[in-house]
Image (cartoon, rainbow, N blue to C red; front, side, top):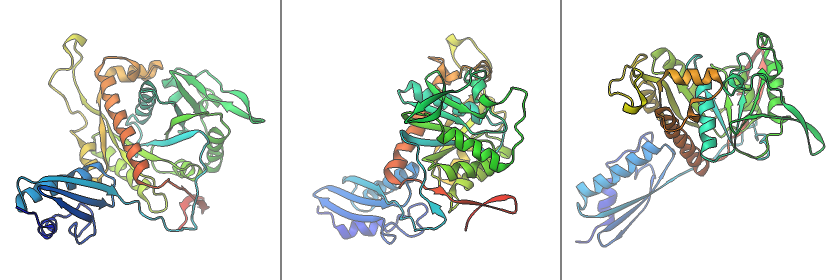
Length: 384
């Protein structure tokens, strides 16, 4: 039997794409429908790059055509994501990219103590193990911890000549290039700086350094949503942000605010996804018998996963609460450096997801712009 294009369109009018409001024909998401004998090709254009929304749309189309048009039809769905046209906004300025750096990923958390720096360190070493060239900037001016986690707390960056200019050479360990304000202070010295002074120090770490060629620069942001975050986004075109949280409701409330910060209209940094740290605890057992089935959800179960679904951002994976992760960080050797362990597998899965979301973001969205920030009444504010 011949398949009618009108019957297909009528069937597709019963499907609504998440976030569109109208059915996919009325909203213009369906670009074209082609039929060849028993084969149907649907061209779809969506306004969001979210993988779960694209997969849901594809599954809905195939199911609906089979139920309402032809149960035996071969259905192919081609999905493209439309990059929204950026309005010319006088408050937005083009970012100041660092030559040689391909992707800049901000690792953030709304709340302190959720293991953001631990996750950033293990992401960095896992990316390096995958063959990428990686650098990490410790932007936590008031509580730098990356030097300890990489066993370089007593190191000092050297000065090198690049193009006739004196630049800082990042400290390197485990194949990762590292810069932190911790290299320039004593272990027992508190950094007591106002916002402008901290921003100036960060700019020096970013632009007065010889980073060389990097596939990924990870920026370990301080907790919260404050002046340092705005200074970083003013200085650099951030490729995307990763938000770290525990499953606990108190942490999730702040993680929600962290995602909201990046989504602010005048900030507009793509959120690559949410990582859940300290997801569950399992008792220590001999490595030969692996992790037992029983898991203890000390801080709650799948809270960050549910938050990601609620905010329609990817869930990048979970990290269990394991004593060796803390011990490895304290010893200056990130746990992901170990091979053939459940921890290595967890970080490999998370890192693969981060890379996939970065690739998807670069294919489907225009480059991020830096924001222009002014200071009013002693507080940083995004200009309206």
